[in-house]
Amino acid sequence: MDILFDTEQGRFSYRVAGLAVKDGKLLVQRAKGDDGLAIPGGHVAFGELTAETLRREFREELGVDVEVGGLAAVGEVFWNWKGPCHQIGLYFWVEFPGEPWEGVRHGFDEYGQVREEVGFSWEPVERVTAGTVKIYPPQAAEWLGAEREVRHFVYIEK
Image: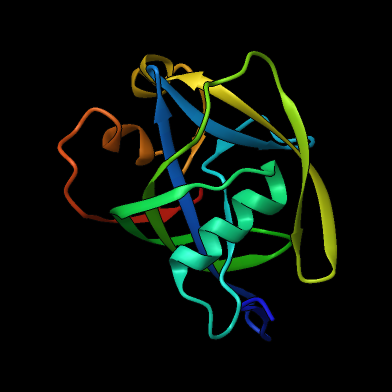
């Protein structure tokens, strides 16, 4: 069971995501109807290690086995997800097998009892770091050109 639940105050989400950078491009996902990009990942199941979650999510959504590296960031994220959502997010570097593809590959993201279509694509890192594309969380743009040190961030959607 995913660590994702609703309370009287809103929703709580424990999510991990994988930063895959290859040939100057970052792997991103876009939910149907959203104009922003997100780092691929998913919700941690109770009793599951975060590295297991990332491997499972990449296998389920893209059919690939990734190698999970070090922790990049820990985030406290507050946003509107059909009401208030408080998310704890862990972001890891991942090694993605194969080469980046052109265009969008479609897959599905499942959480709770919901299944949504998502598109996966490779976005040039310079577009992300320059701020010419909308990415969630926006702090991710800072991690791509920096030394690989663990960061903490707070994102409050306005």
